[in-house]
Length: 121
Image (cartoon, rainbow, N blue to C red; front, side, top):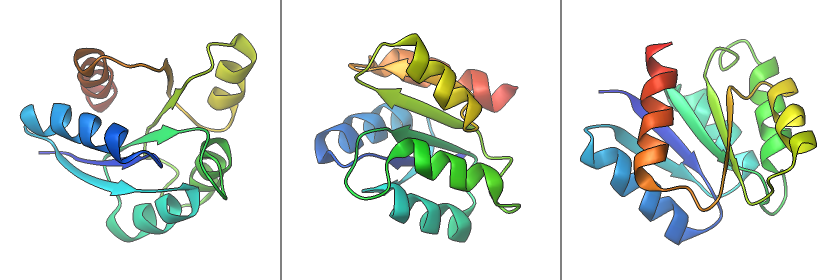
């Protein structure tokens, strides 16, 4: 089954997302911030990345842009998850290479649906 990288500085969010995806048969790995996400993605080449925006150090937008520009990780779909429900943030995320923008709190079923839709695309 597909490998999903979950990037969030909240252990609670990491657990909720991991549990929802693992119940559907996906394998998950986690990173605590953008810099760790870039390193893990380059090493493990996940099938999809779930990326929080607000994190210490490198934020989710910066990490997504960095992943999108690197040849080894450019094709990995990134789903941004943010507490902000602003059109400008959604547009910015898509311009940085994200394929989707979800607003917290994300229900586990909605997360799984978004992941499955992007992996089929």
